[in-house]
View: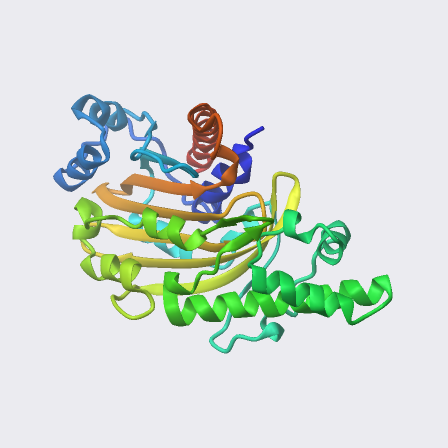
Length: 345
């Protein structure tokens, strides 16, 4: 069964948690907020029409499929008003405390400039996950490349006791995470290695490349350096702030290690936020969230939130049905979470 909570809640929750931490005190406006020209252009480009804009001005939260999906892709766009300024949202996005607000995150850490296995010393897999990592079915249980699987096998074969195998597997996994982080930081998407599951190979690099905007569009027209940054990281463009983090987060009932790239930029007409999960330990392959907040009145912003999540769970036989079911569940959870957050503002 497709579990949207494995991707939908995660991708919205990591950003929306930023809004709910230390919420601003704001009341629902007595009269509809008038959406400005920039926000209307963005809405039109995403696929919302004039009637949709009128509904959002009156407080509706709207979603739609962002674009035609690839075989492994689920994508959703959300359009709504938030009773906070873009600067407030930006500050919450940047604040480390927002990670504490998501109860599915068991642990996390910022990855510094100098990356090694020691950068992940704080990371500890729960007992069940460590047993899987040290076991014989690691190829089925984790997203790893053929070279990474070989490294794990070599390290586990070098020791005899179960306890030593677990320690060796954990240390090898930290090295793997360090290697993936270094490759991404120095090469960008070109450094994202594939996953090997038996004879099947999947490419999170190709997934994330397909999620890149093909043209700046209205949002990124307002932030040209950010558009360049998305496409050319780590070589070009500019942002207000950026950070690589590791997360230990529950996905589909299992803790998973995620390597995420988070960045933001505040421009005169829009604040742009991105999260790119360039490694996910299991359940899905990759994810990219891109959000824009446009000031539309005193203490109000129009939110344009888009995501692309890539998972083998919707590929293959019956893909069209799986996509429809997965998107429906994911959209339902996103809407529920958004309403919960907005009601807390």
